[in-house]
Length: 281
Picture 1 (cartoon, helix red, strand yellow):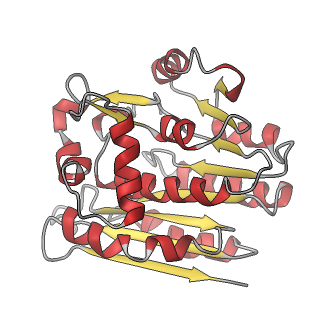
Picture 2 (picture 1 turned 60 degrees about the horizontal axis):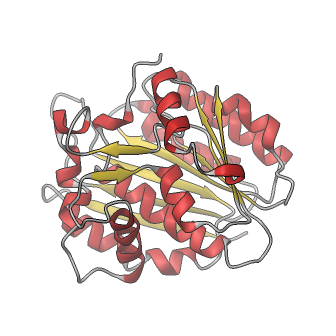
């Protein structure tokens, strides 16, 4: 199924959580001089207009980045993320939301490399156009990111961050995530992996974090944010989470003051909540 377009959801609460964690992951992983490879299996378009097109149909960003945009009292890790969004909006108005690839390009260094996979034809063309002048740092691949992982793992530098965030429109995505992680850990056991998932009222979504925990062979971190109660009709996104394999040891410290602020500022009713669990082996 190739109907999903992330532009409808750009900058929403799920993007906020995902990208706060992404920025802090990159901050930690780029402290070492050795080049880092960032591999994004479902890269999307790279950047999204918040003034026209898909984003304005639902304006989900208003309850996501929109609630943080003018705040000057945020904890450091959350302020760092907002600064990355501001860097994509140099005139000071919130007009564009940078996707994971653009944020990664902004935070990484000249010696680091981005390998971006996108299967959707229109999204991939937009991604290629967005990074047309990026040179050797960025390679865009038109294809299935799950399959593409086998070609890039382990990266030449033996240092890598893999972001896996499919749309989960179909149940097969959940199975594909589990299979991809088993294979990736077999190929590159020391890599850092971040798996995003939606909080939905469906069995596959609710069971995925525990299933990923069983796959983990080393340290792991699980961060989740619920912004509202599940809908009475059983449909819709009420939160999201990230499960990380082999996270930097001090990532939890950076995220600890962020999570309650996200629940407070992005919460839409009294059922807003968060979780942050770190396990070392």
